[in-house]
Image (cartoon, rainbow, N blue to C red; front, side, top):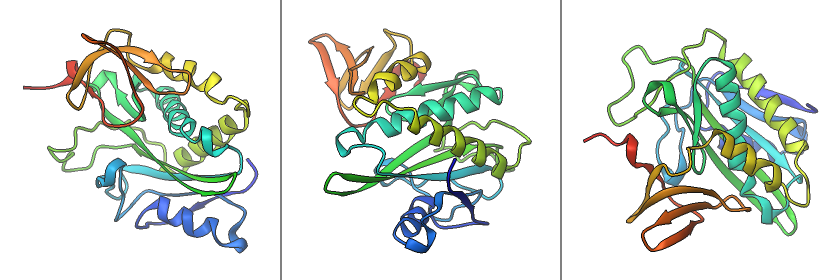
Length: 242
């Protein structure tokens, strides 16, 4: 991995910190920003990401000029795959939920990690900020009721996990075929995704999981036929509680 991982004792958001560093020529060697405490962590669609000190690792990798803007959607899928593989190496039965949640099948499909990708496009050049929040240890008071989360319960220091995750993701990006990066990522995602036929819901649309399209879109078999979902929230219906 060329470049350095910048470790911060705490910060508002690693995605925001990564944006600042990426715009500063004096910090051009910074490839990622990480911490174990965020005060303004956020998830997809503006949600707050529960980031208590000492219980997780929060990492944003800066991907500069390696992915064409048209292929930006491969990055959240790849981040999910890399994070799930690391979680499995650390003992979790990690599975993926489209588009980019990592769940623990051994703990009721509760969320172990989430991914937030943001980007800046300048003509044909894409700078992406790939943020990952990974739960390492359950907070002393537990997770809030509204946060159905699980943790790895590892004794590894957060910085060590951040370094492993950063290295694995950077190497995975480098290995992508430039002409069709989805060609390797989609099969890798499917190997960790839900079994075909898993009941899903996206908004008012219900059906069963039918795989991913070649560009990473979700395929859902409904009573009206197969539907393609390019964005939005997806719920595992079988994981719902009354």
